[in-house]
Length: 212
Image 1 (cartoon, rainbow, N blue to C red):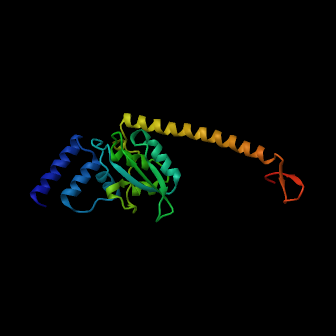
Image 2 (image 1 turned 180 degrees about the horizontal axis):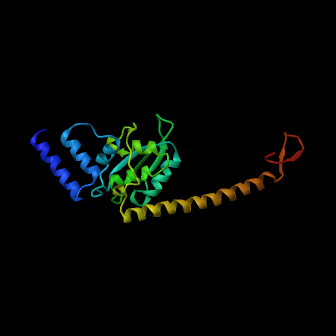
Image 3 (image 1 turned 135 degrees about the vertical axis):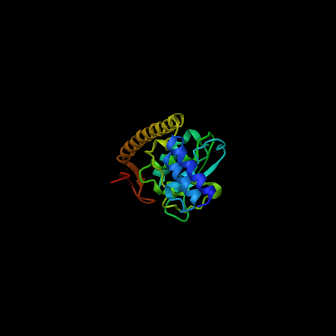
């Protein structure tokens, strides 16, 4: 081991034992210094998704999801942070949906990954989420983030806005459910109304129902 590498390892261990550095950060620092092994999935996720939110306004992201459900849950949770021009479209090469969105209020890439990782069975979203200029649509099958680790948890202010977005989604769904019930009720009523039509040019009119 070279002197520079030894110095880095010793400095990292000192920071860890003093409480100035977390275990995961210390492990990554030592791995980087030694070059002994590539970062694993969680390690890459922490390296690629910065906890810093400064300068993120205007950033554009893309991802794939297995369906509208995952995409909607994610987008609605970050609704207060993104432009209203977000879009969900069929993914041409996959049986999934593709999503693009732009940041209008500062939020860190780590927080975005945290939200995605909080969605049950949202692994396609987690594994494809990238800035638009780096997006390939390919999945990083080893990418994961422990949402139960307090170190990765978004700030109280960010969580508050996420909760507002989720609550707004619930409100919209309740309105949609009420409208759907009313629509179904109207359709049922219309289906039993007798309708008059001519069976032919010279035929007598007959009465029928739209549906059996």
